[in-house]
Amino acid sequence: MLLANILLGFLSYGPMTGYDLKKTLDASTAFFWHAELAQIYPTLKRLVEAGLIQFEVEAQDSRPDKRIYSITTAGRAALREWLVEPLDSLPAKKDSVLLQLFFSGALDKATLLEQLRRQLAVHRVQLEQYQTETKDTVQDQVIQGGLEREGVMWELVREYGVGHERHYVQWLEHAIEVVEKRLK
Amino acid sequence: MLLANILLGFLSYGPMTGYDLKKTLDASTAFFWHAELAQIYPTLKRLVEAGLIQFEVEAQDSRPDKRIYSITTAGRAALREWLVEPLDSLPAKKDSVLLQLFFSGALDKATLLEQLRRQLAVHRVQLEQYQTETKDTVQDQVIQGGLEREGVMWELVREYGVGHERHYVQWLEHAIEVVEKRLK
DNA sequence: AACGGCATGTAACCCGTTACATGATTAT
DNA sequence: ATAATCATGTAACGGGTTACATGCCGTT
Image (cartoon, rainbow over all chains, first blue to last red; front, side, top):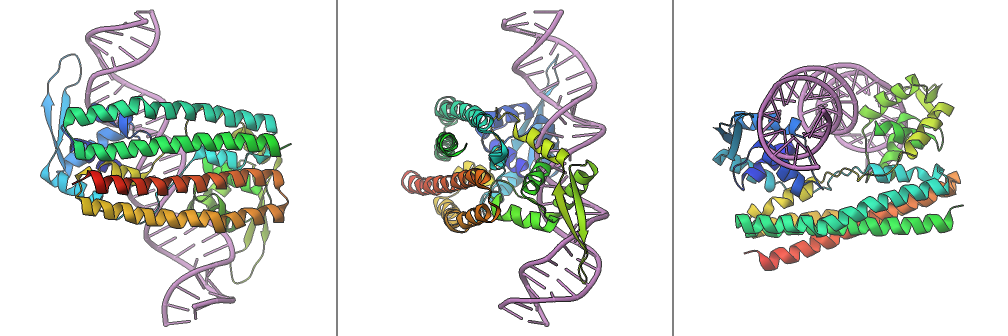
């Protein structure tokens, strides 16, 4: 399960609770991987059973005790095993929006244009976000943790995100133009 | 379920068997959606039960009888309902390769570069394929079926694929450069 | 008074993959 | 001989989402 590897990956940077892991995920890997707490908690349990992580309990009153997870030596080994798996195939893609547009030749021009414009709007917002908030988040992480080597990769992946959204925006603009000109 | 809509979408172009649907999927939507026969057959069954498609049996000897599915009026209505659903959120993305690279700051430089180069190789192949085979497939479909309106959208989506792979290739080239220069 | 954040979890369900099952025909 | 293509399906499993459950604290 990939989520297990993600959790190992984040815990390799330092100890955290399940709740923190969720927030970290949302703030960093959200655009190419996400997960709900309902999946994170059971996965942490399994990782503990497998001896790849361990936890300390921090008592709290008026809310559930915190479980602060940290990676074990076995966990680091498992993480490394995953990281060296050869990248010799394409990542499986699923894009429900492209899918819907693929079949949208059946729509009338006005409705189709509205669809494209709506989608363009959300991608513009997302592009902006990668260039501002996400950029700051990455930088903060690097400075705070002193993880320069890791920071290089985080920044590269963020740049991928920017490029991806830029491409999406350009494509949608192009699609709008084509539909306006070529469809009756 | 999205697969149901895909099947309706393809059947709206003309009658087909489950087996044909799988081949059509592989030849056209593969890069942003795929499905196995083990999922297609039960889904067709459900669509029949829901009255959105129907089938005629074509007897064959020495292999199972063909079930030739076609879309019903109710099916066309359901398809349209899906197509007009507003595209007001981002498609959920999962890219296991980006994920692995995100955590790959922990790897030594040589291993990391090998990972990036391997991945670059597969994307170059894919880019080439969208520009040749996939392009021909789209064109054939348009000519054969006389579906010009639909063809505009298919071609747009194919262009997205080309742009996407081009971006991926460029990013990997950039990443290799950065890793070579900035990582010890 | 209502909502969002903190902090943990369970249960039911749905989606999707892999493996299995059958069996003739055609290509390598 | 062996593998791929045609053509249908079922069964078991795993991954992931949604809904539910608890309950305090701080903000609006």
